[in-house]
Amino acid sequence: MIQRSLTARVVVGALLVVTAVLLGCGLTIVTLTEQRDRRDADADLRRFAGNLAPSISGTLGVAPAPPPAGTPLPTAPPDHLELFDRGGRPIPALLGPPAAGPAGAGDCRSRAW
Image 1: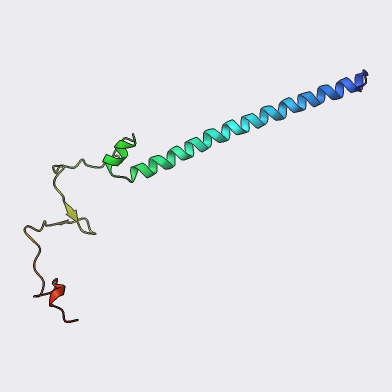
Image 2: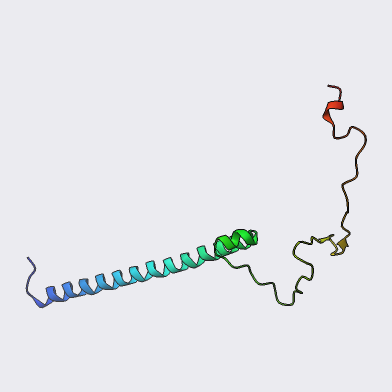
């Protein structure tokens, strides 16, 4: 049995205060950790969705990222494909079918096995 002395009451009160403080700190740590994890996961998902095609990222509900400041807007129509080399110079579009290779190059039936 717990004695009814002043010392016993102080000890029980101190234990209750310490318990309440530990529980409060634990709940605060858990809440803050969940918020940070949610932000990290959200940032990872947005980064992943930014690497997807706009049609797929739109399906996921992620708006496309705005272009960086100072980037000129494209002037070509959306169905126009423009190619650039490593130096940033445009590559002329090849019109017509690709050139044929040497005779029988793509025909595996002409090879002697």
